[in-house]
Structure formats: structure tokens, C-alpha cells
Amino acid sequence: MTEISKQETTSEGTGKLSKPLERTLILKPAMVFGSQANSNVGVGLISCGGRGIRIGLFFPEYTGAKIVAPADVVKKNLAETAAVI
Image 1: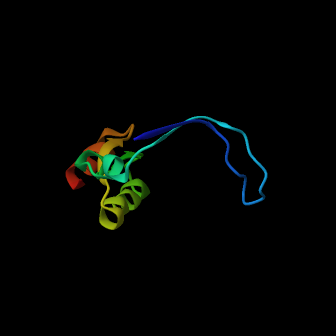
Image 2 (image 1 turned 90 degrees about the horizontal axis):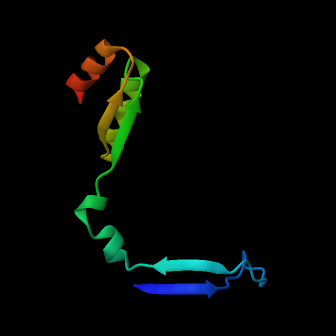
Image 3 (image 1 turned 135 degrees about the vertical axis):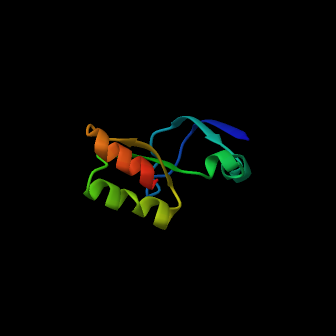
């Protein structure tokens, strides 16, 4: 882990210096991506009726994300969604 303080960077290859960075923390990739806790994505689904659940089911199917927080004001739609997920 390396901490960089007040370092200046170049802006878009123009050679001009941009604003100094106040504090930047550089982490090793293994620290960020090496944990199982960071590997799973949870999705909240608002409005579970009709189109909401049809589109919402694409997330687990195509991205591997899990629907963890369904929400709907109509309890029937929420119950049907809970049965599907």
C-alpha cells in the first residue's frame, strides 16, 4: 500500500499540469479483488410488478448479480417476486 500526497498529474496528454491531488491511496489489486466479499454483486429491484420482474431477472441471468432487495407498494407483486427469486 502506497500513499501519495500532493502529487501533480498531467492532463489528457497536453503536457500541462492539472490540480494537485490532495491524497491518493494506491492499493494492490489483490487487496481489492482478492476477497470473496467483493466478488458478489447485490441488486435492489424497485417496482416488482410486470416489467420490473421481467427486466430484473436479466441481472442474475446475464451478470451473475443476485436480487437482494425487492421493493413494491403492492404486496401481491412483492410476494410473487419473492417466490421467483
